[in-house]
Image 1 (cartoon, helix red, strand yellow):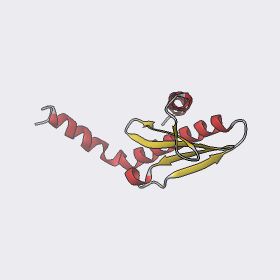
Image 2 (cartoon, helix red, strand yellow):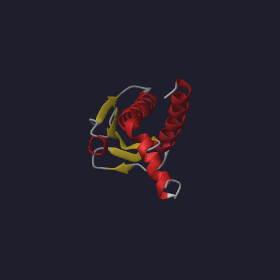
Image 3 (tube, one colour):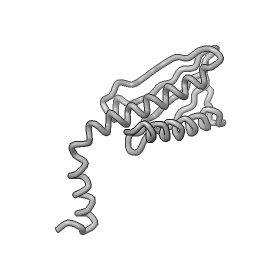
Image 4 (cartoon, one colour):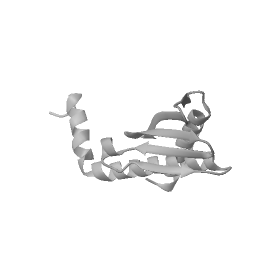
Length: 123
């Protein structure tokens, strides 16, 4: 991924996560508020969760089940916790895309041939 493309995706994902964070989809779960969604780059998407307790914000990115990449969890505190959380989550999603792209690169040509065959373009 080029730096320009990486910057473009970073801006898009950060904007979407920020909208979700500021949205009204927060749920109360006994001792914390929870907000979650599904976000990513192209086909490399993962479930994220934001948990807010008294003075702490926790971000969870669930990638282990779908991609065999360890889940990521990080706690944030302080006056910039929200911005740091969104930035951290965005960076993990971009890293996930890069990991998945590396893994699937050897199979890309075969998949494209498969797609053409489905449409009748290969005989």
